[in-house]
Length: 115
Length: 112
Image (cartoon, chains in turn green, yellow):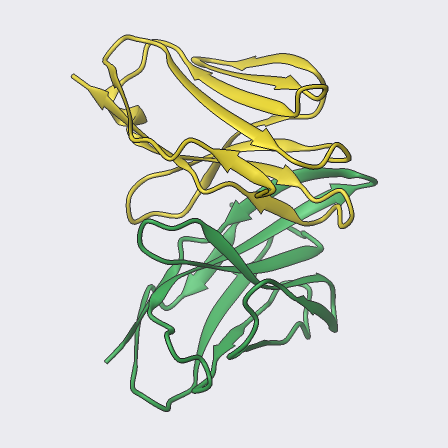
């Protein structure tokens, strides 16, 4: 079955440590996205990518980095520069044609906690 | 003005009633509109998409779109306790069609 796989499900980060969250999709979608969700809050866009080897900053990109070397993969690195990284991280992908977007498919998320 | 606005709730309805969730958006150029359901601790799930004015029905769910009023709604008929979740309204960005802008979500509680 096609879908998006995020790993790990839970991740603990020590102060000053970089961590990488994995996101893989087999839906053949061109676009991929990373969102952050804090408790009781909405979704905030971190980075997105429309094609391989290209990505754009979202609303809260500071302290994060991404790469898009393959169509299927869009890993997110949370760097030590991100001062408050504890949150629920969601990866999504989508297809679109012209001005119509067909909606996002989300992975199951990674819950990151700073210890 | 926020780009996509929703009543935060919580909205409480008795089991079997109709739940009505509302959403307004700011940019007339938007073409694609979505409703996502998010259970507590889980990721959002796409439940409805609508692209033209009028109603679109899928089982107990009906999405309504009025582009002139910049308004989209979701009706849930015969509400069940399993419908208790946060419902996110989302609208595609008119300047970057692959991007979707999410509202803050409305929390729905269906009381048995």
